[in-house]
Image (cartoon, rainbow, N blue to C red; front, side):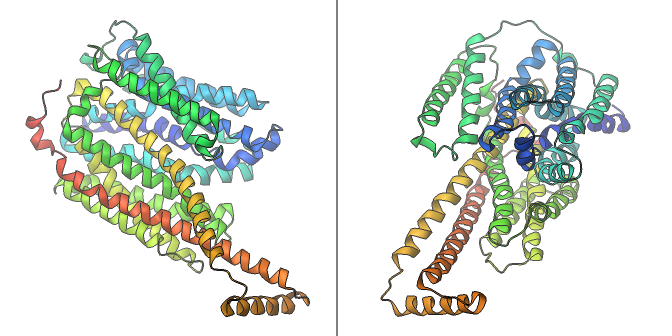
Length: 511
């Protein structure tokens, strides 16, 4: 393959991948406009997000199997076309039920784009250039969740929420034309005939689908105090456990889980899961922090994330070059430590922190994540045969997306529970006979008297409670950031289990 053609292939597959990843988060900031336009409640409107995530998560693990059955190029064309057409239908939806249905269709079209794009890039570039290939792929995977809310907010404020879907159409059409012209199936991926594993298909569809609903709705429903969440969790766990045992017994499984016997590939998945758990958790926590405690509006909150996204874009190509000259395991370990340090600085925030310091912490994190993603993906697939690349990228993409969903769900819960914990602890220390408490009430009454001309003990207690709640929320945020720091540091030893490309001869004989 000549030098120019591989870059054209990269552009052809990265464009729709970037769109697909952006669409996982672009709707979040437009929910209020969608709710008002379609006369729906906010809880009903959130199903537009859940529907996309569920159908997207279901398709990802099936991508390798569907590519074998229908042919990869044919299936990729179908997916991009379906994604583009459903984007138009989402934008033109005139009811919430229609929008939710079209979002399900859009998720079905978009689910295959990440794993197929990654597999094509790894085949288009030689092993020595895997780092650069994954830097290109990382632009979509890493930058999409950051630019999505900012782009969605700007489009919604300046045009309307419909245009967050319409904007996909011209790029989707360009992608279809490029795929038709430059993408070809390799000989080992010719369309084959195989029996449809209906049992395995049913188990993974229900298991992943129900799990995604649990993760997206769990905090709103107060987790297992809700019978709905409890039953969905039980059904999901039963189906996924049954799926694992069922697939391991089949000669031609839908998802070849035997790839995880490869210690290097399995270790890369562990590192990836923790890294994306922390990344998506921080993308959730940081805007909430600056909005709730620093009084930023939605646009400024998005701008806090933007410099980190730019830093990631810059650091990934640099990391792609560095791993061609230095040990990629060393670059990965450095990236994990830098990311851990950046989150630790967030755990030291207070209510007086300024925009520059918050943005700087995101920039450092962006550099660290860029240094993590490129060597990690290169090392993960360096011991995978090309014939198994589609299956391996399906596993890798599935676990990455699930890790992000777990990160958002668990960080939201941790934030709420730790805020309650700190609030109870502070209230226990409030004693009307305590001289410090009496001094606080007197100061609060003086402030009220100065501002309003009136002062009362009840008003002073209200002011004290506001400060107590504010401090409780601050402590909850710092706890969540500190927990994320520890997670990142705990995963560093797994780097030692990864194999470098030159060690490919040592691949475990699981194929």
